Image 1 (cartoon, rainbow, N blue to C red):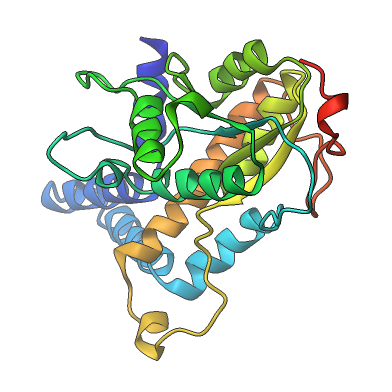
Image 2 (image 1 turned 180 degrees about the horizontal axis):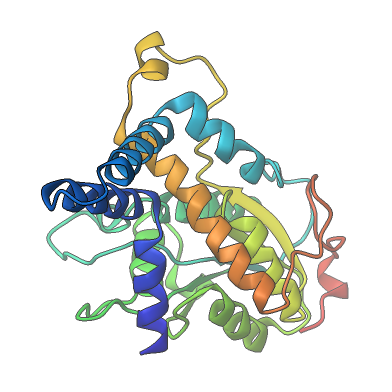
Length: 275
């Protein structure tokens, strides 16, 4: 119940529903002919913020610093035993290709995890994430099936399908891997918060960002000046992660790693790995 309430309140605080509520309040005041100045202010502020957050220069300027914490991980010949891919949005329709069931951030996480698995022969992929209400397949199992469809054998996969959020994912992974170093694969904007939970759980994560969204390379001119739900989605990620980091701060958890570079503990060779 508490988990569902947290998700519901968090959803209401995201840009689109929050600004719609602000503008809706302004419309109600106008229709009731009460507080016209406040109504105009609410409508104006809500509209301007929604416009600004839907523009690429604004959205990606906000998102880029969050994603810049960790660069793309490039294999350097290190030995890694565990590659942990955090769960995300999904559904499960058996009539679709497996990859079509991974929504938004999930598919890039899985493909980056597979890229790292191919660069680290003998590693085990760990997929996390509970089942959504009413879905017979968990987020972790859906990701596992996608990985298998792309050539990863079932023998190289572990599914942890009980965690419902990042903190629970860290606790479940800690029970599995102990003190062994692991590669932590998740969205670039989510990785700073995930690193905080995993280091707080006593783990030794190597940060592997996926699904970078903030665009700094050239775009068509109209893409920079026209509002789009795509750019609003980028702004939403900033908003969502800021709320998550505020909650993490209240829990007394913070990312203990340095702010840049391929970070985490020094990788060790097979003979030195301890579970």
